[in-house]
Length: 271
Image (cartoon, one colour):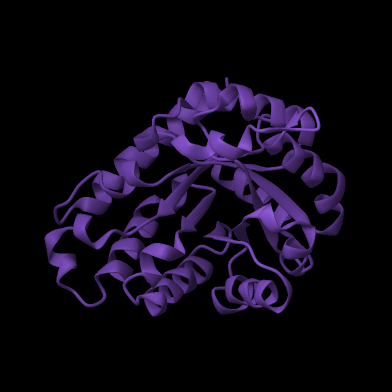
């Protein structure tokens, strides 16, 4: 099944556009997991099990695992999602960007080692840096376009030949990259005006939207600016607000309550 088909099925099955980002900061885990050698793995799996019925996707961020030598725990989390919830889209948030054999190895890491359905990538090095991802059968390539961080305007809004740089990325995605493989874009929730502009450029292309919750993006603005003609098209990510809703033994139940409330708010905004 292609990435696009799996995402369409996930939206239809879950009736949700919510993606839970798995960014396990050891210092923020419940105390009993901070001292557990497999604490990151157990934390993420408990969050996954508590929220799986209210999401369309999970998005583990590789840096939180790699920085503490927990790649094997990331692999276990990815395996758990794929085997227990095969209908849910698994996005590896890696933001890779390189050329030649290195790019091919990064694609192999994402799609063979972790067996993700999609991976985030940086387009700064050009189309050849994306080809190893785009040409992997049935996988998705999610390209950074207009990101939610405060410093994103330093380069992304620069005018190049009369057009903002992030719009050049959107135009390339719609006119070139989508013809090579299943392509999506990262669009920050903190810039709803730009989100609407990009939606008008890329049509029904999926958009991964981080920046709600802790970063302050407004859900209603995101949904109304970013939804496609069918009322879908969005994968709206929440990480910290869901993950750290509680820090006791019942942390997963607290995360579930926030996830349900977020899903419901997204649904209400789409009416």
